[in-house]
Length: 245
Length: 245
Image (tube, rainbow over all chains, first blue to last red):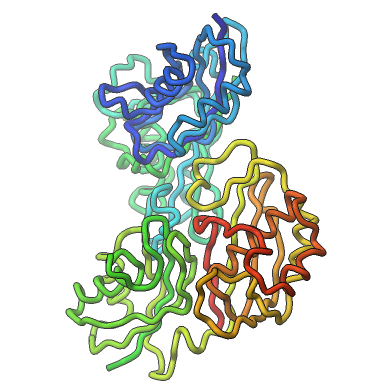
């Protein structure tokens, strides 16, 4: 039995998120079905981040334990050959038995894309939130700074979440203008609550539209009340970009 | 009755190309169905380029004649609201009655994307040709120069094409490395034969793989024989980028 680490990219559009579901239509389910087909083993993948339904990943990380004697590079090729084409394993390597994709992850980096133009692009419709009215990027940047640091992010957590401790550390939050129309909110933190990045993105869009001022972010955080923050931005704009160990 | 010019973007993946077909599943059909829904008119769109099934467009141009009194900006919004989300009209304006999208087009610009990496990207699988083995970009660039100028491009025309005169002018052909994995063949010309850009792309890939030398391109052109050129590259890598008038 050896432990393997994978890094994978996926377009989340047609899947019910990362975590295994009775539907069988999740990234984890597709990976496990691929292994079953190649090695005959029924095993579990442990992912670094449980991306929601519709969320994409450039470099999700996961691990699994296998008795297979197939060399890693061949196993990578074999798994990719049976995976749907919107899920691609980029790296597969044997790691020490104490590696753990979830528990040892130190930092996660997410990007949230907003297509800000009167007219949408058909090429970005699956990968961004379309906002027609111009956004004040300067105000959004000012608001970003308020999120940085250690805070109780209860106001930015999906209602119904069972997590007790809602204190998290955001190391960096900023807004980039990728081109005239495409804006990207980029957020790095040690860990995130359910829907946290999407609620931050929804709140930053409210700031960009002048519905709330950047300085109000502190009050919203202090309120520890989900109803004070903005809407949960659509899943399709969110990309899990990198996990650091 | 007034003439209108539109500029539109579309992802061609699920469509049977630009030109109207009995299937009704073409870009032209979808545009005409949208107008029917908004103004009640049964009319024809004339496009600048008849993109093949699966080919994408960043800025296709077309015209149509309508009796509608809806102001252009409102008509644009109304048409986009009923079009599928992978077809987007970016501009719509009234033009002189002698404007003709097809006959007056002076130059067309196409990009062909190749994802050149052992591992494909799920985000580029619909928009590029995946080639695993490394391509010699220098050789491909050298070969590009051989295409520039006025030539009989019979060797680069789909067999069965009924066009008599196969002389066309290529103004520019080059290869860009967009990033480590993504290569783009960019071609500008006054007009193109059926599958011409895709056969040039397939032939350039043969050059990049060392199967033929850049200098052989002249012989392949001179042969006026489709069997001498490379394969027709897949439609999904091709983008109609710009039409100049």
